[in-house]
Length: 476
Image (cartoon, rainbow, N blue to C red; front, side, top):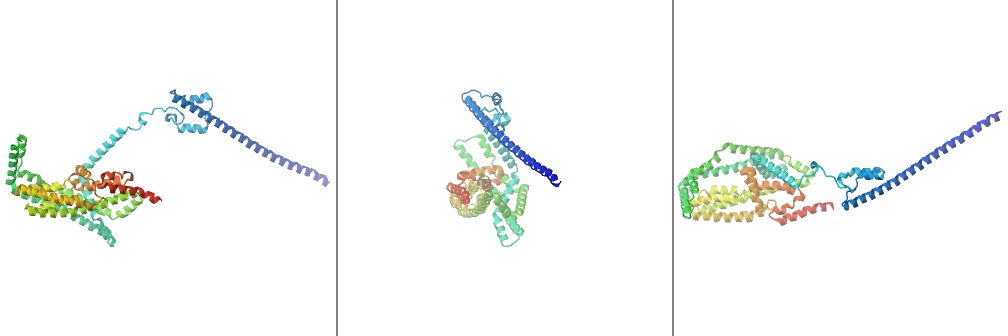
C-alpha cells in the first residue's frame, strides 16, 4: 500500500521538475530572441542612418555645385520631401545648430539679417567713442576745482610716504606716523603758497616806483613803431590804455581773492587728511592687489616711485637753479633778486615753458632799471644756467621713470592746463605718469607705446622685451 502511494508522488515530482526546466528554457529562448531582435533593429537603424547620411552628403555636394554654377540651390525642405525620408536625430540636431540663415555646411545662401542684428559700422563706433571721451573730458574739466587740489595733495603725500613707512618699521604706531606725514605735507603746502603770495606782494609794491620808466618805455616803443611804418590806430589805442595801474589791477586780485585761496587750501588740507587715513592700510591693499592684478600693482608702484623721484629731483634742482639765478642777478644788479629766485624755483616745476615764465619778469625789470645791456645779460645768464642744469644734468637723475619726449611733455602741459586749470601746469607730468601707469604699463599688450613716449626708446624697448620673456621663463 505504501509502495502504491509513493509511485504517484514520484511521478508528480518528476513532472514538476520537467515543467520547471521547460519554463527556464522558454525564458532563455525568449531572452535570446529579444536580444537578437534588438541587434537586428540596431543594425537596421545604423544602415538607414549611414544611407541617409550618404544621401545628404550627395545632395549637399549637388547644391554646392549648383551654387558654384550660379543656380539657386534647392530648398532643404523640398529636397527632404522629394527623397521621402526624415533626417535622423543627429542630422536634425546638426541642422538645428547651424540654421539655414547662417549658411553652415548645407550649401544654402545666408538670408539677410535685419538692421538691428547687424554689427555697427566702424565709423559709428569711432564716432561714439570720440563723443563719449569728449563728454567725459568736459565733465572732468567741470570738476577741476576739486580734482586738481586732491591730486596735488596726493602727490605731496606720495613724496612723504617713505617717512611714514620708516616710522612704522621703528615700531611707532601707524596713526602717529600718519600724523607726522600730514604735518610735513601741510608745511610743504603752506611754504608753497606762502612763497607765491610773498613774491606777488613784493612785485605789487615795487611796480609803482618804476612808473616813469615804464611810461618812457612805451613811448619809445610807439616812436620805434612809427619809424618802421606801424601807425595803426588800433595799436595806438592799445598802447594808450597801458599804464602802471593796469598792471597792479591785474595782480592785486590774486592777493585779495581770499575766498578762492581759502577754498583751495581747505580742499587740499581735507584731501591730505583722508589720504593719510587710507595710507595706514595701503601696504596690505597693494599686497592683495598683487595677487589679483600683478601688472596693475607693479604699474601703480612704478607711478608712485616715478612721481616721488620727479618731485624730489625737481625740488633739488629748482633750489640750485634759483640760487644760481640769484647770484647772477646780484652781479648784474637787478632789483628784487630773492623774488626772482623764488619765481625761478616755482617755475622749475612747469615743464618746457617754466624757464620762459621765470625769465621774462626779471629781464623786463632789468631793461627798465639798467637798460638793454642788463636785460641781455639776464637772458644770457638764465639761458646758460637753465639749459645746462635742466636739459643736461637733471634728466640723468630723473631717469626713465619720468623721462618723456619734449613733444609729449609740451602736449601734456597744454592738455592738463585745459583740464585742471592753472594747477595743471604743476601737475602735468605727474598726471601724465598716472595715465601712463593705468593705460599702458598695466596692459602688457600696450607697452609698445612706451617706445613712442619715452625719451630713451632703447631702454623702453629692452624693458618691453624683458617683460615679454618673464612669463615664459616663469612657466619653464
